[in-house]
Length: 140
Image (cartoon, rainbow, N blue to C red; front, side, top):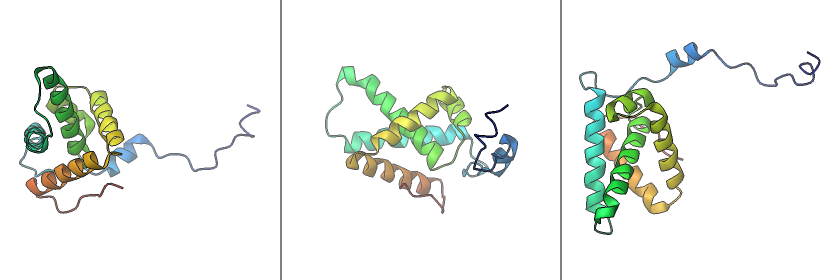
């Protein structure tokens, strides 16, 4: 086509998806631990920390919102800190991988708030300590 010579890509072509998946970091969980168990532990940990550091009593109408926030933060921590794939996290939480992606975006957007960022950072540090991970990427 005549337009192709005017719009040649300046960057090298992307590697095939199979090569990317082979080089991606696998889950950082201990080999003997099931992903579902790890996700349940993280969700329970997030719920307890929110109740511990929450600044207001949960009203009846806020229970659903509370459950959604706990699940979103837990999904984010499982993906970012524990490096579990979105598909595996979705299976563990009974959701789709696209829901996990949405949860990660929501939590990442909320990290602009300093207090929320401090909370999520604390949850990430605790999760890495609980699962015995020595190397965790820091949030920029």
